[in-house]
Length: 171
Image 1 (cartoon, helix red, strand yellow):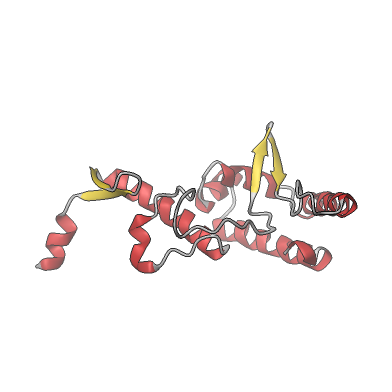
Image 2: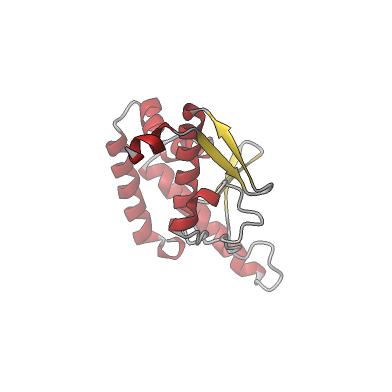
């Protein structure tokens, strides 16, 4: 009986900034909760979030000012940003005055070589990256590409393995 009562309750979001709860429709809740969990789990996997399981409801996807967020950014192709319509990737040491300029230039050249190799191995990886930046799920991306989701993921995994052999410092 108690479980049925819990399921029939209205859905609510917690606003960390104001400390208040807001009632929303089940459809709104499901859509936001799916996005929030995917975002939080990705950040946890990458070591950027240390939100404990008993505080998952606090996560609102805004990491600035969050007590569980880490400020460090790892070297990863997962952290691509779009600038001027082009994908740009995080380069360690870029803008850090303690870094040697030659090292930064060499890292940039290595990154460009790696991206060229990725274009050769799997040209659709860049399309997948752009669609992920737009917030699409893997299932939606695979549908746009016209291939099964597992096929897309296995191709990405194979491309990553090949890149890891040639460019281990980026993984």
